[in-house]
Amino acid sequence: MSDQKTKEKKDTNIDKDADKEKRKNDKRFFYSIYWYYLKKFKWSFFIGALAVVIINAIDMLPPLLIKYVIDNLKGEGKLSYPLFFYLIIFVIMYAVMGILRFVWRYFFMVNARQVETDLKKELYNKILFGRYKEVSKLNPGNIVSLLGQDIENFRMFVGPGNLICVDMITYFIYVPAMVIYVLGPLGLILLTPFLLIPFSS
Image (cartoon, rainbow, N blue to C red; front, side, top):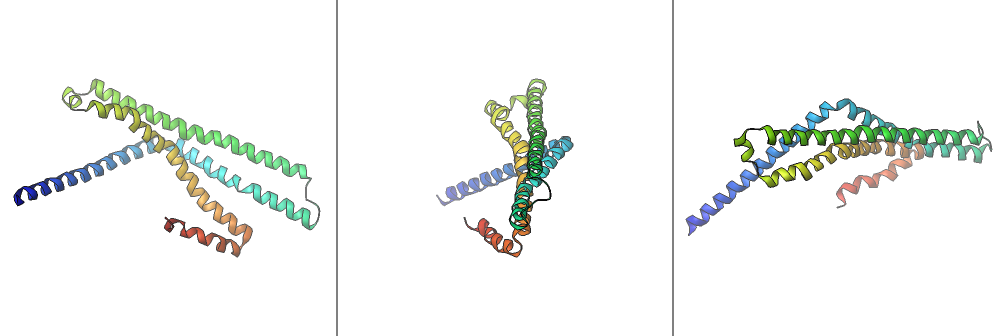
């Protein structure tokens, strides 16, 4: 009886090790494909990322402009230029942001769709023109999953995933800098509780 239990434990440990190894190999395979397409479309993703960085920088300017206008009107009671001039600046800023939003949508989302198409074509060609012995070993369920949800998830990782990552990094830099610029040392006190957010859950 004890020998049987020992054998079952060994089999369980072997299965666990095999699962761990499979996950590691899957991760390596996933990142190898990711870096391949990131290099292939590097200039497109770079232009998209640059557009996001500029948009987020411009997004920081309206509060500063409003602060400048209000401070001058309250203090001296007059502005260097007519109020209509500052309104035009507002319109120009948001027009530029609108154009750049189209740019990042094009370079992130359209290229992500291209990646999705390339992967589906590659898988289709492998099934259609691959060696019979290799193709016959493939599980039909896995093929359907790859052509559907798996490639879709990869597209979301390459497109919106990269976009959100760049967006998060830029805001993480811009927002604290803006708070400190506007409030001075008081901004540091205001931002201190945010350092505890990662440990709150």
